[in-house]
Image (tube, each protein chain N blue to C red):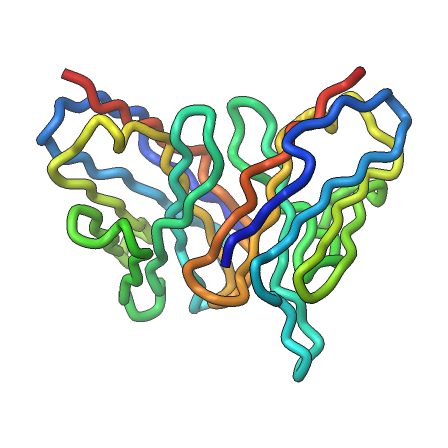
Length: 112
Length: 118
């Protein structure tokens, strides 16, 4: 499954809303159990990725509530409701519906 | 919370082998996946495969069959990635990451940089 993110990069003012899109080449949702096999990660320079969202919309423990995820089927979105300086990072989506697990190419978020 | 601690950076010559370790602590589940992920310089994330920590059975993604070997030492809760016949294009950061058998990668090691250069 090919994961395509958009945009590749964006520059946002502090406090602004940020939206990152992720599209899969085939559905990563299971209608029989209503599960969505889509995660979002944040990677800051020199650090490993950090899990933010799993199941398309469930925040990992400790993740600020300004991060939210939505979507189903083939189209998903990560939203940062009010960008903070510490949110500067590259964000990746990831499908774990079918192997090989695959990642989007990443979206770089910078401060304007 | 699971902690994964990887071995340090490696500098190897083409044709050599390297073995990267990933030691886990704090995991409460008896069965989880230990995944390996490659990140080439300035690039994205590529899943290499996983090893079942309960059975020791490895699964390799296409493109990582042959020169790449995952192994497990349960006595020291450590998983290993060995890469044989190293090539320049193997230069990357290699991460280990845990997940439920079919789930998101919830804990990551700090990464091990492998540089292949003559």
